[in-house]
Image (tube, rainbow, N blue to C red):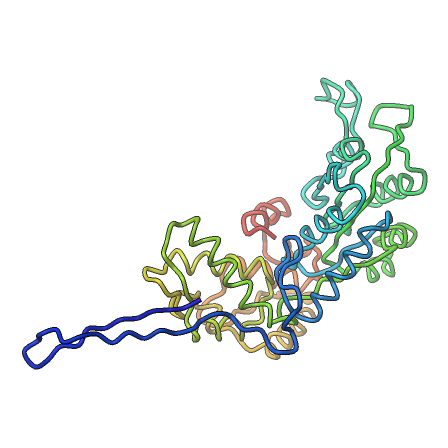
Amino acid sequence: MISLNASPIKDAVYEFNGAVIVARDITPILPEELQGERTRFHRFIGVSRVMQDVYRLIENVGRVDTAVLIAGESGTGKELAAEALHAESRRKDWPLVKVDCAAMPEDLLESELFGHKKGAFTGADRDRPGRLLQADKGSLFLDEIGDISPRMQLRLLRFLQEKTFNPVGQDTFVKVDVRIIAATNVDLKKKVKSGAFREDLYYRLKVVEVLLPPLRERKECIPLLVRHFLAIFRNELEKNIINISDQAMEALTAYAWPGNVRELRHVIERACVLCKGATLLREHLADELLYAPQPDAVQESTAATGRAAAEPGFRIQQHGPYLSEQQQIIQALQATGGNKAKAAKLLGVDRSTLYRKMQRYRF
C-alpha cells in the first residue's frame, strides 16, 4: 500500500519547472514475532497471541458437540464466536438460531424459546414453533444468559438434561437435537455464589468456556481493525479515504476502549463521516477519546465508581470535556458489574429505555 503526494515546483515568476513526488510505503507491518500468524478467522480480525489461542480453541471445540459458554465484555465479539463455533461444527449446514435473553421479559422469552399452542394465553391465536424447534439439528445461541429468571433457568436446565421440552400450553413433550451456545458479559461465578444463578445450570452450560479478551489487552490488533473498518465505511459512505495519519492511529492505540471492538467501529464510522480528504486525521476523532484518562486512571476510576455505586447519591463521574450518553451507559454497566436493572436505576431511566439505548449503540 503506497501513499503518493505531489507538489509543483515554480520559479520566481511562478513558471512551472517540475514537481516533487513523495511515495510512502504505508503497508501495515506486523511485529516479527507475529509474522506468519493468522490475521483473520471467520469474522474475527486480530493477530495477537491471545487471539491466536482463541482461534485454536474455537477450532478444537467446534468439532466437539458439547455446550459452550462464551464470556467477555460487551463488544468483544461473543456473537462472532458463536458463529465461528457453529461454522466449525458438524452442524454448519443447519441453522444457527440466535436469542437475546436480555431483550425479553420472562413470559415472552419462554414462548420465544419453547413455542406455544393456540389459546395458551391471551393473544395466542395460532400455534407457534419456538426457537429450539427452529434450531433442530443446528445450534441455539443464547446471548446474555446471565439475565434469565430463576424459572427460565429451571426450564433450560431440564432441557439440557433431557433434550426434550413442552411448548407453552402443550402437555406432550418435543424432542430436538440442538447444541447450546451461551454467552454472558457478567461474572456468572459471582451470580452463582449470590444465589442469582443456578450452580447446576452454570456447569451444564460451561462444559467448555471461550473467554474473549477486551480490546485493551490486544492492542496490536487495533491497526488491522481500523483498516478493516476504514474499508467498510469507505465503500458505504462512497468516500476516497485511503489512509489514517500516524497521530490518529497513536490516539486510537492509546485509548482504553471500554466498549471494545464495537466502540472502535462506531469511532471509525464517525471519523469517516467527518473526513473530507483522503486521510483520516486526529481531528476527526471524538473529544472523549482524545482527552480520555490513561488506562491506569480508567481502572482506578472504575474501581472507585464500583465502590460508590452502592452509596446513596452516587452519580456518573465525568472525564474530559464531556461524557457522551454511550460512555455514561458503559460506565454505569461497569459500576454495576453488568447488572442492567441496577445500571438503569443508576442512570435514572427505565430498564426498557436502557435496552433501547443499548440496541441503538449496538451493545
